Amino acid sequence: MGTIRLVQGDITKVKADAIVNAANTSLLGGGGVDGAIHKAAGPELLEYCKKCGGARPGEAKISPGFRLPAKYVIHAVGPVWYGGNRREDEILKNAYLSSLKLARAKQLKSIAFPSISTGAYHFPKERAARIAIETIKSFINNNTYPDEIIFVLFDDESYQIYRSFLEK
Ligand code: ADP
Figure 1 (spheres, rainbow, N blue to C red):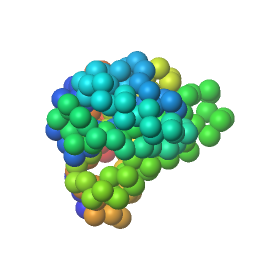
Figure 2 (figure 1 turned 120 degrees about the vertical axis):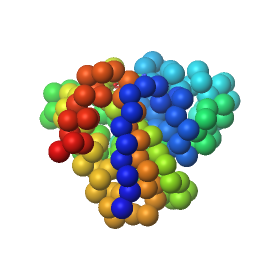
Figure 3 (figure 1 turned 90 degrees about the vertical axis):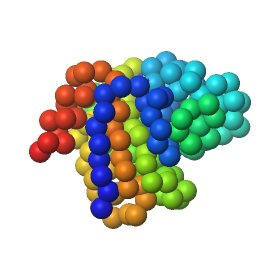
Figure 4 (figure 1 turned 60 degrees about the horizontal axis):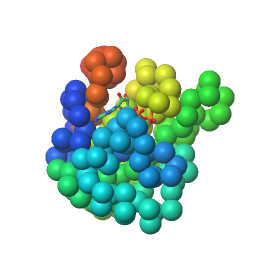
């Protein structure tokens, strides 16, 4: 049994065992939360990620956090939203599950998630929040690690959506 917390703000400031990055398949950085994480972690992160060989949608890879307060960064690749008929739901669920499995393998206690795929990738926000929350709740109910989940929502709309789902 773990705990789920909700905060509004910048995930690069969060001192968790791992923060999750909404990465693209190259794992070489980009805009949004990806750009913010690379900027805060320093150029060592890009050097490290160049050796990771990319990741497919639904997969994740782990790196050190370098200059971040978090020990690790888990780079998860979410789906681009094409309207819902290209297995977007399943791929988003797999991006969360792949991240959780990497945290479990390293016995990490705390992990912070942004809202994967709902920025530049245009996945509908409420639909994504439901998938994120359901996937994470079921995982932490069946595993010892991780046991402290922090959802870090950047914009007010996403924060309010998560708040209303988590209050239910
Ligand atoms: P994607 O390409 O997966 O859609 P984005 O980074 O474009 O990823 O957006 C994903 C979510 O991350 C959006 O809700 C965006 O507002 C949010 N975001 C952007 N910067 C940060 C940050 N520094 N910390 C947490 N969330 C952020």
